[in-house]
Image (tube, rainbow, N blue to C red):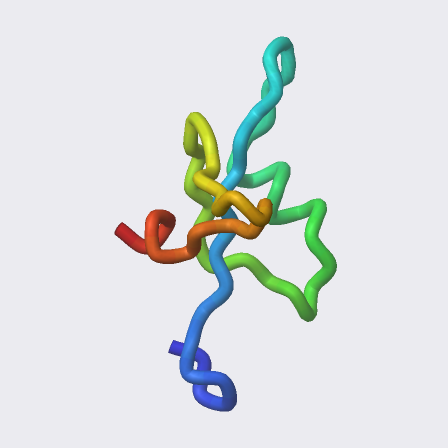
Length: 60
């Protein structure tokens, strides 16, 4: 865990058809102060009827 915030940032990534990207490429793309601890590739990200990301689904 990050001492000041108590959490580590992670990324959930949905790759569009026809594109290829690696975890290392994504980590290099993000600026140093937003350092990603882990990258998870998922098929889709669940959203509520209001269009907000359902973070509980991502955590499970």
